Image (tube, rainbow, N blue to C red):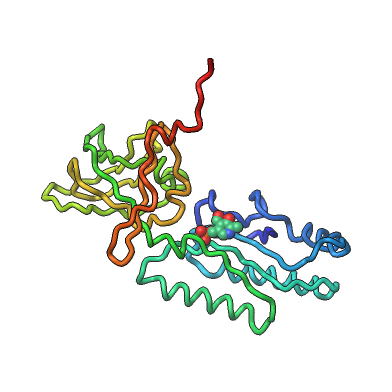
Length: 266
Ligand SMILES: Cc1ncc(COP(=O)(O)O)c(C=O)c1O
């Protein structure tokens, strides 16, 4: 994996292709490594990879990084090192249904035009763009309160269940599943975990009352996989809807689940 030193418009925590990021190796170092490795009898050099970050909506940085990789590949070819695979990683943002087709088409046209009629195999590693909008997180409003200038809706899901807003300020759409006639107010949608960083959405104009069910939209990626038992909280159940049937594919955790591997000292 090389580091192409490409800047992308995303949160710095999920930008991974700049030279000061921890990922990959500098292309000049990679050049030396290929020359070192080409004579090792148990090493078969097949390809080169990069991954420039996540939640990227602009296709230009992907095109730029592909260009850098192709130029490098050509340089190696002249030096008699032939690679057959180029992996440009994942990183496309989560797309809503309207924007999806256009952006994917834009992405593939842009990549193909850069790739031209080359014969190497190109590999993509899409993550959130294929699964993000397939999942929802449902949460119940425990209660509402006002502190200082702010209205809070405290829900029964927290940053341990869905950490992306707290970790890198992901702006998630939140809608109410329950209809009510309460006055609309600007709410902070927060969890029950013991930090002020425990929020799911900020500044949301909504009508909310205790007992309502709210829904975090496009929550299908990096949700359960990043969930934890912080604050001794049980991770939620996972339900798949298939052919209009609800299938529980993971049960809600219990006290036994979260203490199973613990033992008491004498
Ligand atoms: C090497 C690599 N490839 C692909 C991905 C998937 O990224 P995304 O979900 O943004 O498409 C990641 C995510 O961190 C990654 O580290």
